Structures are given as C-alpha cells and as structure tokens.
Length: 613
Ligand SMILES: Nc1nc2c(ncn2[C@@H]2O[C@H](COP(=O)(O)OP(=O)(O)OP(=O)(O)O)[C@@H](O)[C@H]2O)c(=O)[nH]1
Ligand SMILES: [Mg+2]
Image 1 (tube, rainbow, N blue to C red):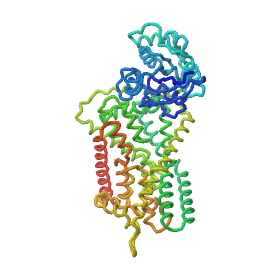
Image 2 (cartoon, rainbow, N blue to C red):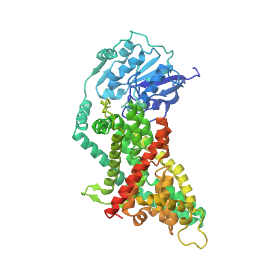
Image 3 (cartoon, rainbow, N blue to C red):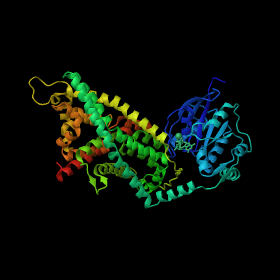
Image 4 (cartoon, protein in one colour):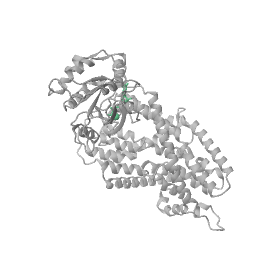
C-alpha cells in the first residue's frame, strides 16, 4: 500500500457524531457531546486501515451549509472549497449524516456532492435508527447518489468496520450520476420517500412526552430550576464524607513527614508549602468531579439545547440570543472552552458580549474558594428539613453570577436597536449517557485538576512560601516571622486599598498568586496562616481558623470579590486570541476588577451596617 497517507476529512451537520467517529478511528479523546457546535476548530489524527493503509484524518466543526458564516463553520467551508490558508482540499470527504435526521443531513451531503470531489456518505447512529423504527435502503441510496453510502455506529466497537473496508478499496472517484437538482430540499424529499421507511416506536413517543414537559412554558423552567438546585445540593452533600477522609489523610501525612524532619527551612518548605499547598486544594477533587458528573450527564442527555430554548426569552431580555447559552454554560466548567465555543455565534456583537460576560460564569476553579468560605461561615444545617443550607448558599452564588452577567450584557447591548433574533436550534435526540464516556470524562477532569495542583498550584505556593519566609525576622524580634517577610510587607502595603472592602493583609497576600489561578488563594491562605501560627497543623485547620479570625462581613466581601474578579491569566489570554485584540483583553480585566471592588465594597459596608462585623 502507498506510504503517503490518504488525506481525508470528516464533514457534516453539527451533532451527527463526527467527533465520536474521529475518536473511534484515531483513538483520540476529543470532546463529544449531545448538542450542536461542540467542535469549533479542526483537529487532526492518524490511523491505519485493516490493510495498513495510513490515513490522515481531519475532524471539522459541523456546519449546516457550505455557505455558512459563523467563525467555526467557516473553517469547514474553507477546507472543503480549497480556500484554507494551510490545508489543501482533502482527497476524500467523509460526509457523516445522522440516520435519525436524514431530512436535514442529506441536504448537506447533496451540497458536498455538488463539489464533485471523491466522497463517501457515512450514515451514523444506525443503532438509534433501529430503535426508532427506521429502515434505510443504503444500497438504493448509494445507487441513486452515485457515491458509497455506508452504515456506521461510532459509539460501538466494530461499528466502523464498513467504513474501514471502504477506505481500503481504492480508487477514489468523484461522484457520477444524475445531474444535480437545483432544489436540494426537493431532492431530499424524493430520496426519503423512496429509500426510508418509518414506523414510530414507543421510544419516539416517550421523547415527545419528555419534550412536552421540558419545553412547557411553566413546567419546563421549574424542572430546570430543580435540576440545577439538586446539582448544587449534591456537590456539597455527596462530596463531604470523601473530602473529610482526604483531609484527615492529608493532615496525617503532613504530620508524619513533619515529625521525620528537623525543624527548619526544609521542613517548612515541605510541610507548609508543598504538602499543605497541594493538599488543601486537592481535597476539593470530589466536589469538582460531582459537578462535572452533572455537566457531562446533562451534555450527553440532549437536555442542554432544550434548556437553551427555554432560556431564549430571558437571554433576549439581556440583548442576547439562546445561541449564547451553551458557550455560557460551558463556562461553568471553565471560561476557556466557553469562550472558544462562542465561535458558533454568527452575530459579531453577540459573540463579543458573550465573551465579555463568560468570565463571570462561575468556573470550577472558584469552587474551592466558595466551599472553603461557605464551610467556615455557613452553618451545616438543614432548611425546611430538606435542603442543606450550604448547598443553598452555593446555589445563590451561582445564581447571583448569572443574574449579574445578564444585567451586564443588557448594559453592553443597550442602545442597540432590538433585532429579531429567531433562535434556530436543533433539538437532538435524548440519549442515556454512556457510562464509559462519563467515566472517561471524569478521569480526564481528575487528571487535569490534579496535574494543575501538582504543577502551577504547588509552584505558586512555593513561590509564595519563599516570599513569606524571607527575609527572616531581625534578632530579638517578637511577633510572627511572616510579618517581617517580603509577603508580609506587600500585604501590609496593599492594605490601604483593600481595607475599605474588609480584606486583611493575609487575604491581600493570597490574592497575588490567586491572580494566576483562582484555587491558589485557598492554599495561599493555608500557607500564610500556617507560617503565621505557632503550631504545626494550622494549615489543616484552615476552616475553623478562618471562622475565628475573620468577620462574616469580610468573608462575604471576599465571596463577592470572587464572583467578579478576573483572577485567571489564561482566560485573558484566550480573550485576546479569540478577539484578536489586546485592548479588549485588558478592558475585560479592568471592568471585572472594577466590578469586583465595587461589589466587595458594597457587600462589606452593608454587612457591617447590618451587624456582621
Ligand atoms: N447512539 C449513538 N450515539 C452516537 C453515535 N455517534 C455519536 N453519538 C452521540 O452523538 C452525540 C454527538 O456526537 P459528536 O461526535 O459530538 O457530534 P459532532 O458531529 O462531532 O458534533 P459537532 O462537533 O457539534 O459538529 C454525542 O452524544 C455522541 O455520544 C452513534 O453511532 N450512536
Ligand atoms: Mg465534533
């Protein structure tokens, strides 16, 4: 077989399973989810067919048409039409269509066929089609279109056998056959009538019934609220036992290592900076995983686009469209993929506003900070015998961030004449999340989080430890050593600016490494307090320490700060890249800092007035 790889690209409508197929063929782990617009940039992979023919495969963003214009779809258009800067036209276009949605997807396949290039049509989700009582005459379709039409189940092992066999069978010829009809819709209707038979099954009826509830103007939002509410309750209640165990383990480990080392700088470095630094953040792993379990399950189930549909009215009142919903929702995991997902938004102004408010959506890196403060200041108690008060406060923080984001969007879009924003959004099939996918997704999250802890967080913490330990106190000094250190001094210098919002110098110090990565603030506080304390396990007892040393007003003020402050350099870097403007990135940082300061000031002063000092 030839040594130069066959250069092929996956094209098709959004959500037809291109990335699932790409992952299956190339063994990659690119993100797959049950809504349109998951892939927003081209990805490349390689594999070999059974007869050892090498293939270079591109996974492209889904697009409804080769005339589409949103930034993600444009990549696909350019590559297919040979307009792309760095990629030539693929030798083979693998056009993936969803067997359960041929009416829409075949239209695109016909459009691709008009390019007159070698192609195959992969009819994916044949398992789902069978469950829905669809039978498709693939050979008939193939004969009518003059291109190979191949069945496929991307999510099953062996589900791509027919495609692999086809790739092994050269030569590639451009489609021949009847001249292209001018009206693709009419052509699709004709093909469906001739080659597809349907007999609705119980599954179809169930999906209809679910839609009637989920999309109902009153019941729908109620369900959405309950889902979100339960999500935050479980983040607290399910995670707690595991976190307690991890916390004990960490304390025990730190103590063990501490006893084995002589008192001095090395011991302080290992116990206070590395173990306490990594440990205090690592214990939040269970909470983060529970949050992601929910997000992944919701993504796979097909519920998200329905929520987007429900919220279209609310989004419109903020001057945005339902299109912004999924990028904003992705930002709850992390603002970076959220900001990248805005490439699916066609209207440049909507896209920019969505980018600007994405950092407000509560990313998972805020969770450790929120949990720490809630754990220290909100009593662990049931409300109405049912809800966990801590979960309730967490839910409130998320809700506050969302409402603030929408208000800001409204402010940013004011003065713009209200445009009609018809929301065209596909409602995908409901799908029971595959356990293996969930496990894989969680595993990826866990390794990502722990490697972040092991690298950036430990590094920043060691840096902070060094700043907090040197220079040492002058001989004969009373007071804690940290007061004389560089960090202690910086903290005190910052005080005049931050005293009005209730921050003490320890918080000021922890804000500095927290600028690079939010979670570091937690370990930084642990380190600063451990170094300032006389006993050894101060870091492990951070929660009671905070509740003893801080006023409620200070804690609330810091929470308000964390809702708004742009404490993540990577987010600003992505904003710069996606907007191509350094000015916008700096502007975002400036407006978020200003907001954070104002919100903290207001929170602190009001809380003090109400007696929380
Ligand atoms: N039942 C079933 N589900 C599938 C199959 N292929 C993909 N899926 C699911 O379909 C959904 C969409 O898959 P993706 O691979 O993300 O779709 P995509 O075409 O890459 O979508 P975009 O990146 O948005 O263009 C996911 O929930 C997959 O798990 C299949 O053959 N059978
Ligand atoms: Mg994809």
